[in-house]
Length: 149
Image 1 (cartoon, rainbow, N blue to C red):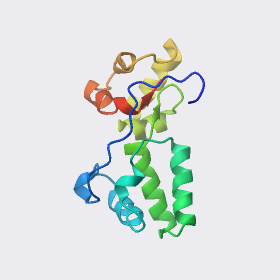
Image 2: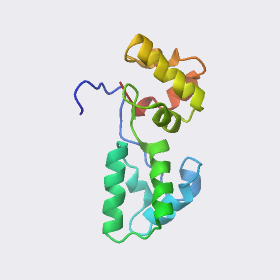
Image 3: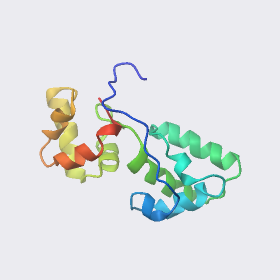
Image 4: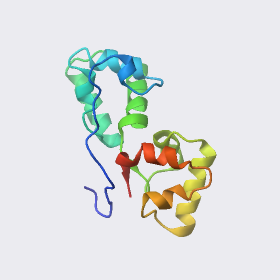
């Protein structure tokens, strides 16, 4: 674990039971992820645990090195899909763009989170994060297992 980071309720991701598109969160890149990752193994094994953005980059590089077939655009779609749905959210280190992607919020809400962090210091808890204007509690709660403070 990185120094100074606190894991809040972090658990292994619960992989879907199968590789059908209905088993994964909707979004751009989902079908590409399933197709490319299922060519060698079940896509569910790829998301058996949450990873950082950099770890997903390494994983995808290894997949390509080991023969997984995908265009540059497809790898980019897969990376974005994994970041949005299966990456840790480093709340106190993330840029507004990172928060926009991983929390799935508008740019304005992500900017508000960064401003709040700059004004009051690092977020210490989920409750602190919920104080960001416009950031709905259900949005935070849905990602609680991925939050790292």
